[in-house]
Image 1 (cartoon, rainbow, N blue to C red):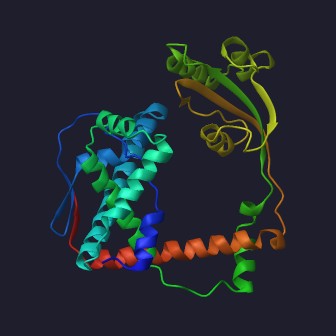
Image 2: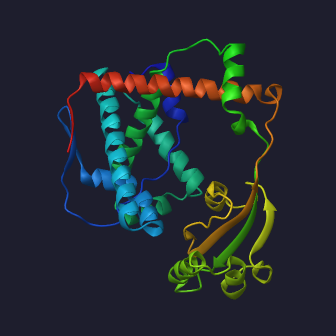
Image 3: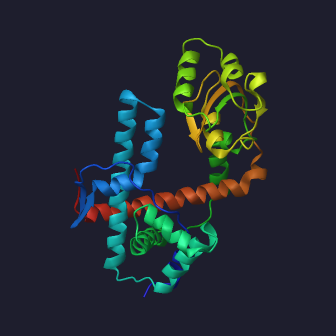
Amino acid sequence: MVSRSLAIALSLLLLALPAQAAEEVLDGIAAVVNKEVITFSQVRELIAAREHNLRENFQGRKLSDKVKDLRLSAINELVDRALVLQEFEKNKFNIPDYIIDDHVNTIIREQFNGDRQAFIRTLQAQGYTIQRFRKLETDKMIVQAMRQRSVKPTLPPSAGEIEAYYNRHKSDFSDPSEIKLRMIVLRSSNPNGRKLASDIRSRIHNGADFARMAEMYSEDSTREQGGDWGWIGPTTLHEALAQPAFSLHAGEISPVIEIAGNHYLLYVEARKNGKPKPLAQVRDEVIGRITHERRQKAQEEWIATLRKKAYVKVF
């Protein structure tokens, strides 16, 4: 039977539905882990949504390089998962059925308002049976729990380690940065939104004024102000917009961003970096970061030992 700590870790884990592949291609062998074969269909299943996103925002050689890196990363992730699952079986662990049942029921309750039929219809639309879904979720739970189990208890970081980490990462413990943002929004009601957004972006790169383009084409309340949002912090925007917005340098324009059928162009006119918070104020956060990084390193070292003992070939 599974150990008590492993059972608790399994019962606490909640995972989302897997993504379906976006296109049909011939299957083949991506890797072999001991006697287990990893197929290209498994790779596509893992990265379909992320690859679609890349194809929406990049093209040419840059797209090719990013897709190649994404697929290689996915293959290595699947290799690691196979090694962990094999280690689970080797140790003759077992997951009680009630843990899987509770996990699935939690998903139905929290993501489908308790409507089991809606849950089943969603699975069917994605090409899954309930049995296949349970197997995928079980594998994910095993991997997460085994990774947690691989980390041995350690002493808390010393005062010197805490101070040194804080000094190396002061920018991470600062008040929120601010950006002066302009935005162009093309609503989902526009059937040519993506093409128009791409054309506008090209015109701006060729010298057109972003504010003027916003006045002409944007479909949000800031249109008359040239898409001007003023100075904003990272919590002002939807997360899907905040991340790309705050990754831009002053004077940069984002790729076309699609959210729920709407298309966005972001332009950062200027940036203000936040001031570092004193160590006393963020000590608990620093300790949490150090502890998390230690756990990550321990898990990576454990996976490395599994790889050393296994036959792994990537094609």
